[in-house]
Image (cartoon, rainbow, N blue to C red; front, top):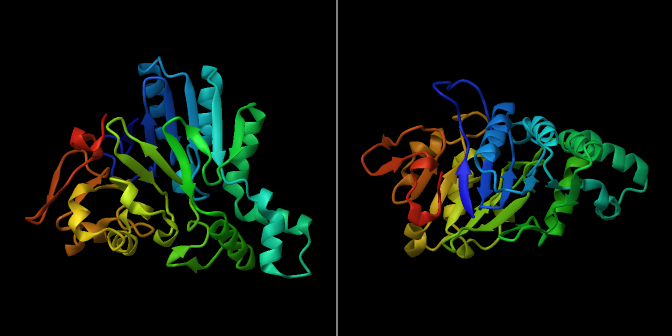
Length: 306
């Protein structure tokens, strides 16, 4: 599989396009999030330029608008194109009973709890409803779910997922877990093996505490657009003598909006690390010791291609 991360368009530095990452080979495409209708248009252009692709999977990592705002439009385009689609996302209602057991509140009924879940995770509901209307396949993205021959779901584990949703129910979708917004913490994490055998980990806005063992990966998406605290936690999970083997991907065109990457770009934490940021159309020198660049300029030895 190869990786292409979409970013801003032209000289537009104001629009918040959000995340959209493509993993693909000659016959299949995995779309991990789609935060803007412009990204949806680009995915369709990509497919028309790669006509041998006949299998399309869409992974919706979590409920946030900058990860899902283009997905309904993408589903519409793919319906018009006559494509065969499978959507993978968290089907929260399947865990209602376990959430009730964790909440341990006799006043809550299964029906009321399901309604509450649908209110809190409203964007996911809309996507599932639209995919069902178009007669696309919808699958629950639980651990070990196979998305493609080279891609599978590796997180969050069920206990973490249940705990996050239960906390969201208790707090009306507000609050934090391990420093991350409660609805973001259990973002779906995707493992993909690139065509040179170096594994990629995509993790949306997941809490670093919920990520798998990073020793099995060499390309790691930094959660929440390179949020400094998340990046620090992830770097702390890697043996320092192996840090030079890693490429870190920042999918970002928002700056510090919602905890973006500007703080990382000016922090000493970046020094000695290979960090690719989609926010730049050309390589940008930050200080004297580290070059940040768009993923399109990444070295092919890391398995990152246009």
